[in-house]
Every structure is written in C-alpha cells, then in structure tokens.
Length: 247
Length: 353
Image (cartoon, rainbow over all chains, first blue to last red; front, side, top):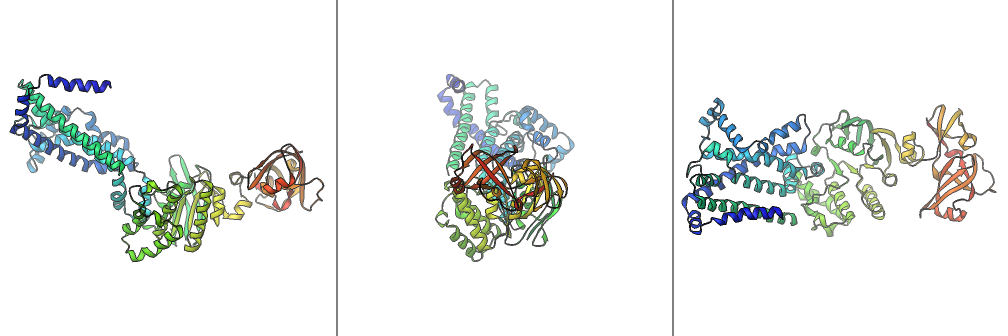
C-alpha cells in the first residue's frame, strides 16, 4: 500500500506541470515519433540478441555442474552489478583500443550510431536475461528430459518439445522484462551513442535532452509516453502469462 | 539381457560401489534397499545420466556404458512418472513414435494392444493434470512400453499409491510381463512389492550389494545381518558354532541343531524368521528337531491378514512371532498370556558376526 502510494504520488506530481497543449504537440511531433520508433526497434533487437545468447548459457548453468560454475555465473551476471554509465564507458573504451577499432572498421560503426544503442542495451539486459532464463530452466525437471531421451528423443528434440514449452512462462517473462529494461536504458546508451537529436535520440535520451533545455512540459509528456509503453508491456506480459498458466 | 559388471559411480559424498547383477530376458529383477542405499543412483548409472566411475553395462551382449541414452533402448518410469504435463495423454503415448519417426503401421499394433490391456483408451484426449494417480501410472507404463524397449527400468513407480491401487497395478504389471515377455529392472524399498513382481532380488545397502539371488532364497536366508535387518528379520541372537549343524545360543536355551547357514565357525548370529516360529499349547506333544521356549506374550496385534506377537521367553529374550489372524483367534492369545513357542531346527540359520 505504501509502495503504491509512493508511486502514485510520483506520477501525480507530473500532472502538476502537465500542459495539455504541449502534451498533444509533443505526442504528435515527428521527433517524438522518431524516438518511439528508435526505442522500440533498438530495445526489440537488443532483447532478441540477449535472449539468443542467454539461452544456451542459462541452460548450461541450469543443467551442468562444472569447475568454476559459480565464477561463470557471477561473470555472466556482471552487467547487473555494474552501473549502466560504467558499462557504457567500458564499451566506449573498448572501441578505442585496436581490436574495437578493427571491429568498427569491418562491421558496424557502434560509437554514436544505432548499432551502439543496440549494443549498450544488449549488454545491459544480458545479465537479467541469463538470470531469468536460468530460473525458468531450473523449474523444468531434469527427469522429464531423461524420460524424453529414453523415449528416443535426441537432446535437441527433447529441448524443443519438452524443455522449451515447459519453460515458456519464464521465457515470456524474461523477454518482456528485458525489453522493458532495454526500453528505459539511459546511462550506457548515452555514453556509447551520445545525445544527437533525430539520430540517437531514444526516449530516455529525449527526456534528458528536453530537461537539459529546461523544457519541463515536454519532459513530462515524454515521461508519460515512456511510462505508458512500459506499463502496457508489463500488462500484456501479465495477461499472456496468465493465459499460458491456465492453458 | 542386462548385465552390470562392477558398476561404480559417485554422487557428492555417496558412492555406488562395484555393483554387479544380471537381468535375464523376460525376468523381473528387483533392487531392494532402504532410502539412501543408492537404488536410484544405480538406475541413473545404467541410464547413463550419471557418469560411471568404473565398470560396464551390457545389454544383449553389447556394451552400452557410454552409448547416448536415446540409443540404449531402455524404458524408464521414474518415481514421479515423468509424464509431460503440457501434452495430452495421446501425445504422451505417441511421443516416442514421433521422436523416432516410426511409421504408424509399425507402432500402432503394440500401442493398441497395450491400450487394450491397461484400459486407458477413454483417457486419450485428457490432459495429464486431470488424471488420477492410478491413471497416471498406467499412462506412464504404456508410454514406456510403447517405445518397445529391451529392458524397462522402474524407479519405485507405485510408491505414492494407496494399498489397493498398488496391488491392482502389481497385477497389471504381472499380466504385462507375462504377455509381453518384459524384462524389468525394478527399484523399490517395498519388500512386498519386490516379492509380488520380482523373480530375482538384489539387496543394496549403502551403495553395496549385500545379497543377490532368487526371491525365495533372499527372503528365507539373508546372507548378512544388514540384509536380514532390512528384510524385516528381528530375531537375531548371538551364538557360537560348536560343530557341524550345532550351535550354542544361551538366549534360546543352550545347544541347538541348525540345518544351514552362511557362517563358517566361531561367533555367529542365530536367526529365524518371525513366521517360522510356531505357537504351541503347553500340552502339545514334543516334536523332533524343535526347540520349545516357555514365556509370556507382551503384545498381540491383529493386523487383519496377519498377526504380530511379541513373546518374552523365560530366558529373557524377546522374539517376534508372525502368524495368521485366524491362528491368533484360534489360540485366543492376548497380551500378558503365558505361552509356548516352537523353533524348528530346519528354519534356524546362522549369519556371520
């Protein structure tokens, strides 16, 4: 109850300086539409990449015992404990060394570019994705996979037909929460991609830019857009998970 | 058909130590042991889901110790049955055929026959969560057998069921075994279950084989005190072997004749199963080769099918006596009554101490 009241009072404070005309203007402006499109696209790409990479790592951590497993688990969760600004700085420094420079020359240009936004968000959510997927796989009994194999299933067939369907609640939850976290990511994105209007202006960066220019009404309008998208994603996730659980 | 040769495996601090046994074709071999004795560990070593530290597993003469699990053709029903909760009964039963891409014409006759024997046709469209405990057991059994395995491994699959349903499924297993010629390696801690289903029994205690042999021998003549105690034998008394077929046991009144035993000399345990002790009336004529002890019944419990009595002999020793309920009623024994118990020499045996 106290937490709800706290959140409600924070949100309510936004309406104190909300100007309906500026809200309307901000919502329908080309710049806001760009930020929304960029944020959704970058967050979606970063989340898909993070889940693809996290899936085998989380499964290995859930199913196998090996020397140095705890150390590996800690390293894989490292983005969770490093501040996004520090993570962004690390990425920036990486692209300033010969290997990073070579990668940029031979693939995408990450610094101050769209690829940099995706990379920053990807690294920010990777730890969360590994942790959530591991928890999802931990929930599926190893015995079921063993039985599947005695019935003639290869490890891959057993994974696809037994493990993945039974872990789907966790997978959906991991996707939505990782996506929401990527969408709201600021620190690492700002360090890597900077704040260039209509180029690297994701929603959180647009909020920062508006606030920097003392445009409080515009800031509030963008905050509401970001909060609405985030809450809608969480709401859809809850509905989806509820439906899956009762299916 | 299935041979385990000096199989050893390590799980944390527990070691399965050099287990050897063989299961003949069409035979049910029960591995009997208390909780934590390594029964499930043994099954996992056979399945290959646990690394084998030493020893070999052979199936029909072919070594399968390091063969991938899906190519071993071993059926497996774990304690929790391992039914896939996201699939219907039908999809669970067809899982193996789909995984192996077996044409319907090949798997259908066997599956249809198994469905007929177990009577689970009405369950086919049901979801697993809607099934009762007994229905789940049947589905799990049919699913394992429909894959046409060479040996079926059962890890206490009937433990969670109530007595009458368990017995019903034991009969079903016997029918399936007879009709399909099943080769089964059963793991259980239930003595009655092992006797009901198994032709051979291996007693496993603390990761080691205490005894292995045919059902009747293991039951009547445990080979060690650990095996005897696990098999429910409480009548164990210190004795001394003084000659061929002769022991001195102060607790049972001195010198006695014994017919067989595993002990070879010196200090031994003298043992007799509770159902081999005979209730006698004080004026019953003496019988050859039977020691009689006078005393008092401290407890007399009618368990329905059988009765259990605690008899304190005048020598001070406590004996456990098992007899039919009708016998108890015929003798009219109650706790506190004086009585006489007979120990037939043919049923006394010795164990190493």
